[in-house]
Image 1 (tube, rainbow, N blue to C red):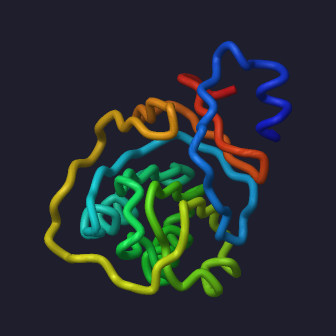
Image 2: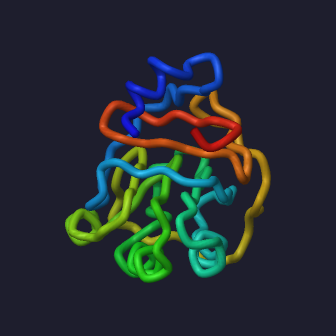
Length: 156
C-alpha cells in the first residue's frame, strides 16, 4: 500500500519519518514488522540481525546518521535477500549501491560511503530507537516507498 494512501486513511495512527532517506534497493516499496539494531560505525550486530530476524521483517538500523562508513554492503544485502526480508532502513550509509540496486530488497539509507565499518560487535538489538521524529518499536509495522516512510503500531 502506498504511504500517501495510508496517510490519507490512517494519519492519526501513523508516525511519519521526517528524516530524508534515499532508496537504493531493487524494491522501491516495502513493508513489514520492525526489528531493530543500534550501532555506531560497526556492523557486526547488523549482520547478526540479518541472519536471525524472521522472514518478511524490516530491519531498522540506527547508525546515528554517521557518514564515516557503510553499515550494509552487497554481501549483507544478499543475506537479507536469501532470508526473504522485506527491507532494511539505515540511519547511516550503505556501499555497493549499484549491486544493491539490482537486488529484490527494499533498502533506504541516508547516503553512501565506500569505507567498510569496524567489526567490534558493539551496539544493541531489539530496543526502541528514536530518529526522524519516529519511535521505531520492534514489532510495529513500517511502510516505505518513494514518498516516504510511515510507522504504525499495528499492521494496516
